[in-house]
Amino acid sequence: MTCTLLTFANDGSGKSSLNSQETRHSLRNAFIKVIGTRCGPNHPVDFCLTREGFEKPVAIARIGKDGSVTLNPLGYYYGSVPKMAQITPTNAAQLWSPDGLDATKGGSCTYELRNFLRDTFNIDLRFKNNRLSQYRVRSNCPSQKKEKWFSV
Image 1: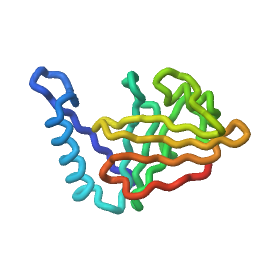
Image 2: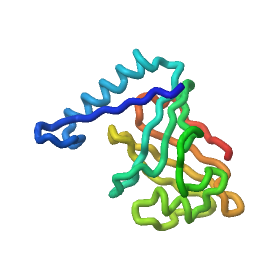
Image 3: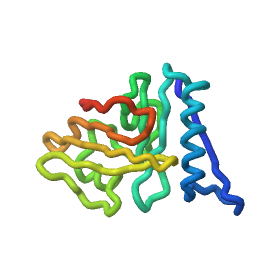
């Protein structure tokens, strides 16, 4: 079972806004409260992630029961996005790089994505034979309790 959390902040202009520090702080506190009460520690929480300068989601991060973060979990329709095991350095750059340029050096690279609370999620990737072989997600999200490498 996955908890779904949709939160909208209104800055008084009638538009949703996450621009003020106070609004982000309030949202973070509300989010933590929801995780601690409705979702509890035994349910994963999913976030849509975006890249800099791009409004639409480019990935989904799931913070699991153990506090580790998996990328693009099963249960979602990803359209033309390749499965994790089929991602090439070029695919990764097109999806997660702000400029679309491949940042792979020596078979690895890191991309920075954000969730709606503006938490940073650094996606570390390792490639073997031009395919994604491992990834790790590091974030400042309060729910992430451990960083671990996942093989694909």
